[in-house]
Image (cartoon, rainbow, N blue to C red):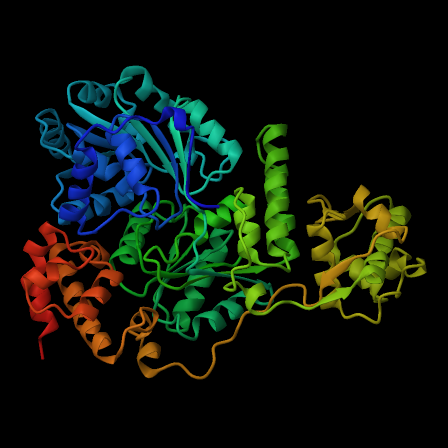
Length: 631
């Protein structure tokens, strides 16, 4: 799907001068020569006073869609963000570009909060970041009423949806913005939202007449790989042992215990790995997040409590040791890789137990029956994604309503799994599930059923007399691993359900009947899941040491440019420590790489490089030229 703008009847005419003012701000402040994709249409629409709902993938430049209009329009742009811990970095990045930015949240002292409030009333702030809890206080609403407002930007807007994976109850109160400030344009932004979530965003934020902008959800720089879970920590170490060593990444785990164990295991193998979960003290979480954002090569091992809104552009991989509950969650989490557009990896180890655990959490939740029904549907879609034997990207984009062609850059495209006629095997497995339930009155789990199928005479099988069943031993000619792969694919196709009661008991669905009767052929992937591609050859000494030359390799730099790039990265790290900001706030790797390629001789040459705005040219220009020509 190409980038599109829906609800064109809500399009506002662009007054003369806005287009030129927006482009001037983009070039002067951010140093970019032109807008990308839908950015220009969104910027012009919001600058003209129109409301908007913006769906744009992570790394596509959503923030410019409200930051530029905030500078073009008179007054202050107010950004509602649920991420107090990241506001400082977002404000620091704007200040580095010469923008007057501030934030109001609970981390400020009373004196600092009053200083910001005075500046707000005086019109001395271009952009103000506010947590939703703070914004909904009467004190903050009165402050806004006493100030001139350019717009409201509601970031991570999917948090308003109770069907979403990041629901935040405080977002439900944001309809007050429309009620108390009806003349101030609002733009709601999110990186992922299915049609149901989009409808809820419109309804709960009173954006009925907003123009909807939908960018392509494709992230072509990300390689999607899903492997059969087989000692996942060992598999993770194998993944990281090549070019990814020394690179920043995120490893997601389902439980706090697994987070702690995985982080320790990575540290034992020489990785700079930190844990992050809700059970850690707040100061430890904040310190670990700060290190991840401000240092190179840190691996964050976390539950889903970590990550929303992460601005770090050089995350080279996102790994899942447990399957997310939905495609939305998977897309949102994997989208934190490669925000800078450079090659990155999304890797997941998946097993049937993931389905059991996720189903249990859904069924035991306090949600309504409708919530549980929708959640089970989302889980089924995620299982289908994991078990796909075709292009993963095609399936992922189709989920969001976008048609595409095979990408050539996922595991199934690069290493297509063999397919085999598994009709007879499927009938044996389905029959065994049926016979065990018929004999016992209830179902059993995968390991037990496959044991009976293969003729394992263990104590429990003999005690229950399941060795007397007609299906006992009829699958002895197939190994247990292959049977597990067959079962996972039958679950993904909806022929078998995995109930969380009785330790994941297997149950047949109505869809199994035609297969049992021999009326339907079953073709399955032979290996069950694509295998991870192992790194070729040994890694370089520099990569093993953690510094690595992977960034310059990924950027496609020649030898001389790579040497200049290394000098610039060393200078940037020192400058970031001096200014107390993350390195990427000063310049992204992609910006440094372009400087290294062009090798500017003076400030005039440097001024034309994308990402070098007027403020950064004045602040860092001489130092950049000096670093390039240092011996």
